Image (cartoon, rainbow, N blue to C red; front, side, top):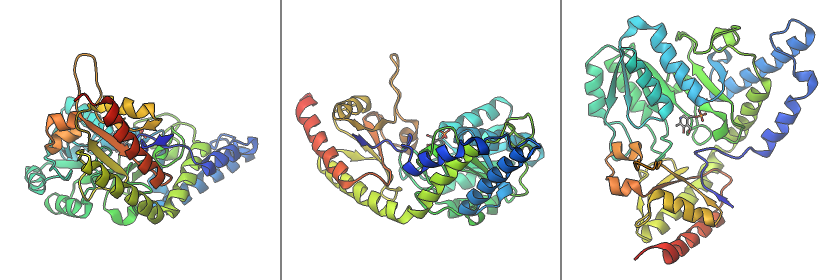
Length: 379
Ligand code: PLP
């Protein structure tokens, strides 16, 4: 099997699997909110995990909240900030190339009387700076939402330039940053990054599904999305799970140690595939300076889903960025927003790598693409 769909999700690593078993032992499984000794032990374990996680991300423990996924983190940050800070402004700035977790949260705000202003995106996948300046200069901007690494193309946000522009034209604007596809693939230090709220997802870094993180910088106030028993300082109610938090931490430790090695390995795979696929007439849609973990490529003569299923025959797994329904063929909104023409976008396939992928797999992939062209292309 060749699994090139790591931006969708990753396999659980051996060490996460091992850690999960350890953390489900009876002696560690009490409710951290319980008053008895076992409860105190469970709380100590949980808070220890929170502290270590915060340390690896360059944050303070009280700035880290464990959630069920990055979608929950995005919803909490975006809706929670606007709900709590009504006097900070009525407008939110973002781009149309965000993940649906952000776009649908913004849609919710739009339906509740807020103004959402979308900054244009260029063919390089980056926000157009003149458009950003124009939208900011209209004033009243409480929140700006961006993504550090785009999940469909790997485009990297020039965050220093973007944040500098936001803070200079609209100093009180708070910044939310989706860091899901960047975690473990490029260094992240939340103390110096410049974002006020960030989201992370465990299952994209070889942890299990069901764990996410929300970072909220000290001093930024938001309303919780999930209320109840007041756990996690009232920010996210529900009994804390040291199992889920511990799985995230284990995965985070592994990826944090291997950032450079992973990048070097994946860069080789990416460069090889770019070269070989281009030589075969495919069009590379990921920008040249994208993070090499994602390679978006349009295959001539094959619609996205057709290519996905052809590759599946050979036990090769990729993803389409378009979802087909019986009535209407949907093409990636990200690629269209970047200015890619509809026909090219309709043939786009996303290959996404993890540090565990190999050059042998890349070579095998090219071999199979040749076979698919020989066998299935209608000439
Ligand atoms: N943001 C980005 C950029 C993503 O790629 C994803 C997952 O595909 C999410 C957010 C949502 O993550 P989760 O599955 O943890 O909700």
